[in-house]
Length: 120
Image (cartoon, rainbow, N blue to C red):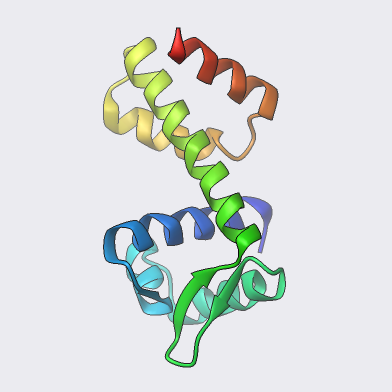
């Protein structure tokens, strides 16, 4: 699993947990439209990396490090989407799609600068 896809799984898990409370692998598969084997592999990688835990009933949860990372990714996403939409006038659905791509490659410095520009 590459860096970007790992971040996508963490961000999706975070959004699903906010919406549903409890999330299982099948929920990730449905949300991302990925096969069950792909999700199973990703969950295993994220678990081995120390980002998530899986209980006996298959419910996914974040470790402290995983929650921190997922929140960082999602904050970048929200900031980028808001910047593109509100400051630059990009249509909201396009800003959403672009933010999802940009969040994985933008530096922390640039992301922080964009966030500061939104606060002013």
